[in-house]
Length: 253
Image (cartoon, rainbow, N blue to C red; front, top):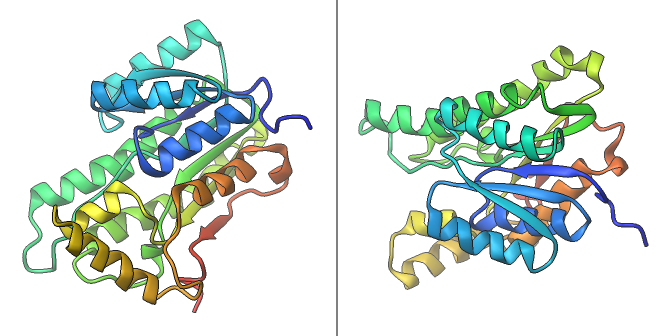
């Protein structure tokens, strides 16, 4: 069978662990050359090795909240490959603070990583994006569910959803698709670390989250990667501006 991304050039930001790494591996296994980014060199090197074990990857150390580093990234891609067919703006994250304890630093850190980073990751990629390219934005079920102590993160992900709706109009003449993928609770380092370093507390968080999901378990990064592959591929050629929930039903009840 033909691989679904054969000959494509893809970029996955924030791909040193979790959903980003699983997606980079899946894209590579399906025939794409995948550029991956991360903020820490040791983790980035390990991720590149993991992706190269199943396909072809190049790692570039980048903090997506810093536009000058994105310029460097895209200049390298332009020089080496000349185009991008798939962009998964996955880098981001956040921490928990309840209303009454939110600081300006917390706000800026969350919005810089999720909103500013996503905006300039996509905007600066525009000269490289091929006609018919697929852009995937990392959303979250928190945009439609209330979550205690997570309001700033939730608001930042709501902005991501709004980006997709408007950008498909800005890019309609280039036939570039922009979709949002919104995972539910997924077993990633970023999620379990919200519970702190204690393994029992981490497992307690996963068990609690699983109890709220109709499928009775949390998701695995590879399951989110499978949905991202669909959006990246020609199978989703008429899917545009959509929000694909990959949440086991978590936000659908």
